[in-house]
Image (tube, rainbow, N blue to C red; front, side, top):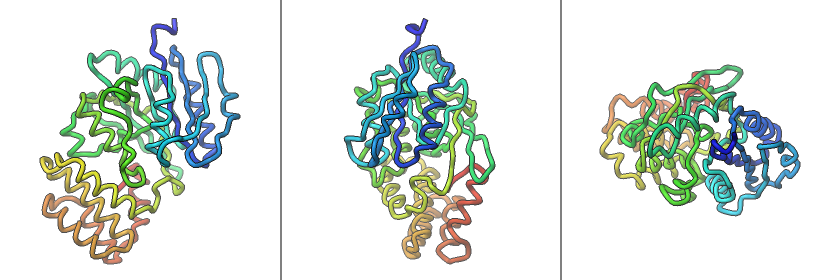
Length: 307
């Protein structure tokens, strides 16, 4: 019976989160998917925990490897993808958990659409003791839509992709982005260039936002990565509101890092493209010391949103 269903390899990059990692792995193994599941845990700049392989069970194999590519999330995901044996590759961050029914629903949706290479779903954001569901109200996502809006609901822990698309199609996760920040957005843009993305309007992944998040407070890296993204995708110029969203994020990052002049420069550029972009005014408020950047983020995160 399981031969009717493609084998799914779940790639889980990790670094120094043993308890959350184990919960993430167990949630993957507990999926009711009738096919085989392989979990590839990729330790990035940390000692591999071979004891995780003891969680294996019939039809559910756990493998532990080290990241042998560039340090960071992108290299770790690619190490896992290249080592994986499944026909489908799924991503899951080590501090997130797949909810019941995720994999069966996504594989069914992906295989039902001719030519589809990529399927996502909604998320349930947990922050500071509160949970908020974030679900896109659409079943298909195009490149133009992604240029206009990052769509935070499209979280890496929801991605399920055909292995052939990663290895011979639109490609692996880009490892050149500074600090691996925004690599998931760049990956989505590239995937959508190849074929529209399939999406399920159900929150099938628990996403934890917390102070230990990998990119918390790394403002210089965030700024550099977003500028890299704008240079890499000149198509943003065709979507002024989308370009303003990214430049507004850069303005906020410059303000949060204490670079008032840089914040003002990027905020002005943002307002030229879209005077209604709120990130520009938040950046100016932070640069003018009228509000603290961490206070803004806490307020947004409580609503299941980010900057």
